[in-house]
Length: 333
Image (cartoon, rainbow, N blue to C red; front, side, top):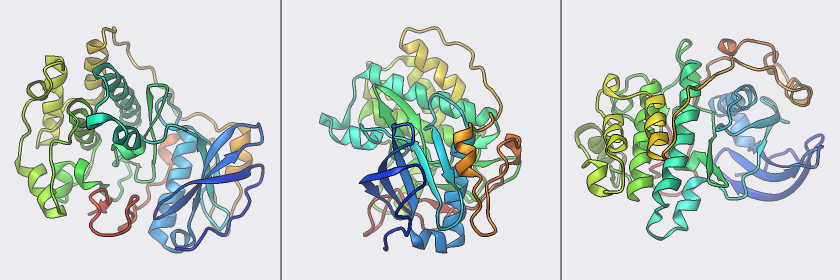
């Protein structure tokens, strides 16, 4: 892989490299207001491949448009062209999978797990209310700070009213996606159910050494009730975790039902979620995000949410490990 050609971003000071994936380089940066941000800069090979470039542009547009306390906030970005980038909130604690890897038994205290899962369920409730499907809910795409969670990486997100390429990561992918059918909010709920087992038991409910083994597990096997694996889990939460892993999408609960059960288990009274439609991008976003590169440009920030274009996900986009079979590889049908 070659380094991104972008050596400077107007208004930002580039600091050290935070990470490098198969599609982007992530740099720590200092914004014009003195705030530290994470800057995602696509690699040249990402920009050269149509699907990969579209996925990055999709992530920029949606990250800047969505507003929810448990979605990773975007500050500015350019979706297409050689100067494309995305500035998002910087999370010094990193992603949830990194945090779990540092813990004995990969286990958080139960209350901490319930809180993180409730935050993720809240973000999904928001996306599903707007008719959007995330498609890649997993611990690698959840970022934590002060015991709270934010869901990020919206490159595979699309609006069900417009359609889009089906995608997912094999450990978290719903049976209907393995079947080659379309994804929906219920597919995200299935992925959330996998995370409920992962956080409150310390293991994912389905394992395999190949894509085929994982496919068979997700399509044919049923994990034990979560309460049998961890007696501290409330019966209502355990039951919803089981239902979230139902083989048929219409048998699964909503993300909001799971959110309510998790908050109740924390001893809180769940409140109704109040949603706002797409907000206008702040001026600092408009100035950068509306810059055009070649024939591409971001849609006007006043466009309604439904007008955000559905884009294709890359066929071979992968997460961190470049060698061998990668169980977190996104697939498309």
